[in-house]
Image 1: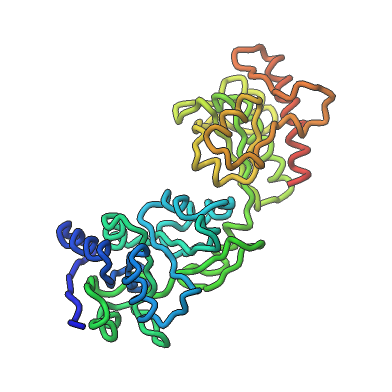
Image 2: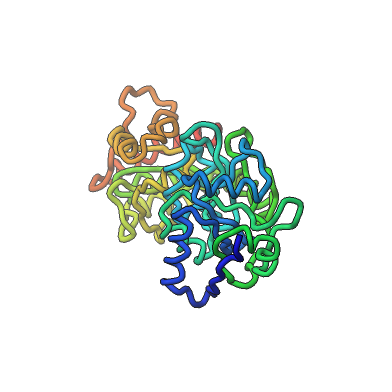
Length: 353
């Protein structure tokens, strides 16, 4: 086979025409050496049988050991994987794009490794190829993964169709691989990201309180649980709040600020946030004030069904009505009554998390 065509594309000058050419070669079944932030890889179109045959031959890899997919958009992960656990979304939120490969349940059956590299050249080529791309390290079996273009080309020039010269990779080590199809999640390979970094993310629980405007009830709940956890020296729980109709312009109501201030909590700097699909997916426990909030959340993200509860369910109060009504516009007595119910529920929540 003829020597590979070489294109020099530096990170500071990404030529659109060159990217388009590389993407076309890749989409049409060519093998392309591309840079990532970790090591150089051999990119191939997963849907092209001949390209995959060549790739398995180059890597001397058995057919029952598939290559990981590389994507250029975080949302693409749900196109290929199913039943994603909260841990997947947490790791993606923290480390993607970047040097992390996660193993998930594949929609096609079995498991699938997926990575979203941060290298912009890799991202552009993958995005414009618009095909599922696998990209194992650019080295022959038994040799170290290439972190410099000359290393990648040394043994592969006559085996691939195109090679992108981008100098030396920025991180110079392979990605970390985490298997999320087992419990507890298992670090299969420790690469750029250390085991401790992965465990630090996975060891923390996240709790989200949701009401309508994120100005009263959810603010009270967030503040009281944070106070409770601080007194117990609990640092393994992250607490936040949001509103179905909230925005960054939303402030805590005056009565909420005053009530919490008397309890030693300052929420005068509170700024609201809206409930989003992404926020719901990274949360372990979602506690809502009313059934209408639960319904809206399940419309947005049905997959979080087993993680959504009415907060009042946790209060030891003999009351068949499990909604905690909105005190907005009500008297001081109404606010105090609302806060009393929330406190009772939070104390129970703090005991079981």
